[in-house]
Length: 530
Image 1 (cartoon, rainbow, N blue to C red):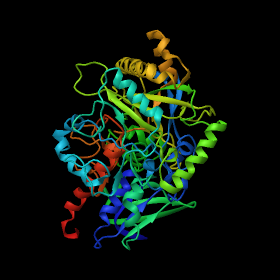
Image 2 (tube, helix red, strand yellow):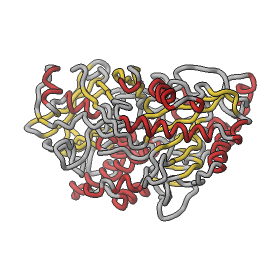
Image 3 (tube, rainbow, N blue to C red):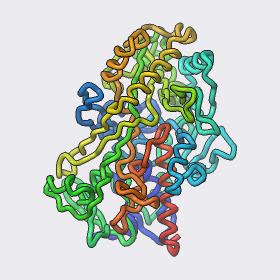
Image 4 (tube, rainbow, N blue to C red):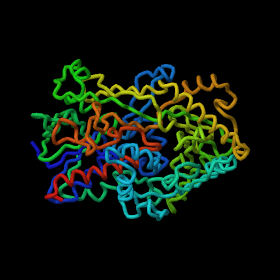
């Protein structure tokens, strides 16, 4: 049986960081276990490849929710990265930290804005913004888009003409406004967490990376985690550790692994014939995600994505620009511009986010339409609806039961309705009319009741699940503010599942920040090794 000092479960946005940082000391041996593949597929690295991965099972777990009552009984879709880099290898690369007050909500846990800012800066290598709020020497490259799509910029112009303020740095002093998104990209290529952290670290003799290995359970002895069991090529393997196991499998899988290991509420474990080892009722509770409605338009221009004769010709031409200069449409993250808006002026911080996409998006791009088009996502940043992740089988290869309970709280419906109305004002502004072919849903013409029905028929996740192993000091907390699993020694959870509440924005950058800080927590525990 192999022994290591540290075992990191999951090579995604958090696990890549932790494995790289812990292996910086040659006094320790680190094992990183990833259920997905190596990140060698070119679709990962050419930014537009995301359009082939998000709607399919290419590098993607492509999970489903149970039927959602708030979505008129529809089954929701939960794409998650199935490769080194995790979801940072298939996402839209948007670099957003969230509102400063989101972290001050956690100040009593020691995670206030001033506590986390140094770790955002430590991770960041911003190519264009140099000031006291940004980092310029970290491993994660952050850049302005090299695509510069005319229609995406027109969306911003339309919003500004309507009176919304322009914002060229959503991670600056003020989040509110409309403008371009910065993205995790280097030289026109995706900069995933794996590229940022593992590409140099993997050359170290003290870091072992195993891919295609699905962790089936944690090995627990006398309320102490001593290792893990994983399945690879149909065979079970066990590995042990002398220091800690760090669970970084994400907000949907980390709670599943805890429950499969007998850690959680007894009522959630024993019905599946699993021995219950430790009562921790918060495991799998507190699932939060951003519910999202997509306005979709056909375009009368080939300057957005589409497979017309003109569109294909343009893509061929753009391929040359990409290969020779790393510029143009192939570097696009699709959601090039957007904004953070308030549905009421008396709000302290924005409550909705817009992503303007230079392609037609229907059902997560799973419904193909060859015509040129553009779309606008509207999501609620702090929904009141909360769900759960539980077991639906004792089989570790089975998907967990995912129930976000989208739009179960009436306030969420009202906020999303207001947000969609605001997005429609921008999309229907005269600046956008020269690009507009037709609106698929004409939501701007609907009554409030009609719009609510459309929202329930079309809303789904914008891929930001968090909270299912939340940090805290209350009875439903799963980990301490230092991310130790409560009541189990030598076990931490380090991923978005520990966030107690949703960040007002995309969750990849906050997850990387969290992992940077967690790595320091671990190093401070073993000062003789670091």
